[in-house]
Image (cartoon, rainbow, N blue to C red):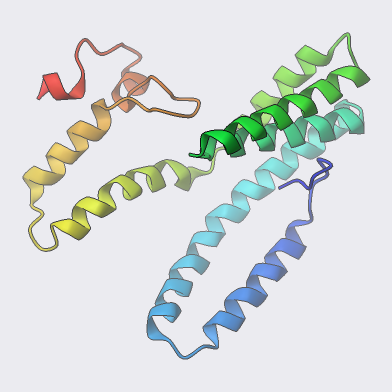
Length: 197
C-alpha cells in the first residue's frame, strides 16, 4: 500500500505491473499455470476493492491531518500488520520496532494530539478488512487435511474440523487468545476444544 516513506503508491501502476506479470506467465505453455493464473486473476478483483478502501481512508485522513503525520502513521500501520503476519520472531520484532519508530515520528510533529490522531487513523484503516483473509486462514488449515485424506473425507470429518477450528484459540494477531466462537458469541469458553470433545 505505502512505500518506505508512508506515501500511498498508485493503484493503477500496481495493477499494470501485475497485469504484465500475469500476461507473461500466461504466455508460457503450461496447463497447470493457466489454471492457477485464472484463479489468481479472479481473486485480484476482491483485493482491488480493499486497496481502494484503504486509499479512501488515507485521502480522508490527509485532508484532516498534516501530511507528515498521515504518512508516518500509515507506514506504522503497515509495518504493524506485517509484523503480525510474520512467523519468524526476529523479523516480527524488527517490524514492530520500525512501526513504533514511525508512530514516534508522527508524535513529534503534533505532540499534543498525537495519540488521538493515531487512534482515529489506525481504527479507520483497520476497518478496511480484506474479506478473503479470514477465509484464507480456514482454507490454509483445511488444505493439509484434504490432501492427506484424499477421497476419504466425509461430512463427519468436516464437522470435527469445524468444531476444532471454531473452538481453538488464535495464537497470533489481534485476535490472539480468542477463539472464533468467543468472538462470535462474546462469551468466554469454559473448556478448551480438546476437553469439549
